[in-house]
Length: 118
Image (tube, rainbow, N blue to C red; front, top):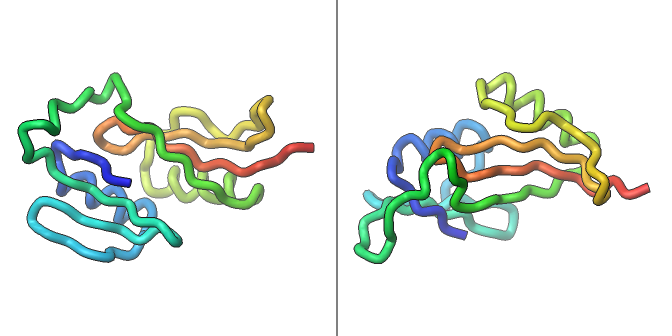
């Protein structure tokens, strides 16, 4: 997964400080974090076909991170402690997930969720 960024430094600080994912590689225009068996890339908008950002009011992407049920509330507390604005506090959804929603500095929607079907 690669997120295109307007402000690479601010996005790098957010993902590094909030998630503490290990850095797999870094260049002047991009950064890759290891997220379990996946990679999350951040790349500065430098190519003509990257287009403009949708902006804060219009998320460009939603990323969801699966955790165990007790970790949803733990993650919420960690996010609050780090000063992250929560968009939707931990909640059991009718589709069988416990979720918490927040956004990165460029308005991409982020979700921490657990399957809690009963």
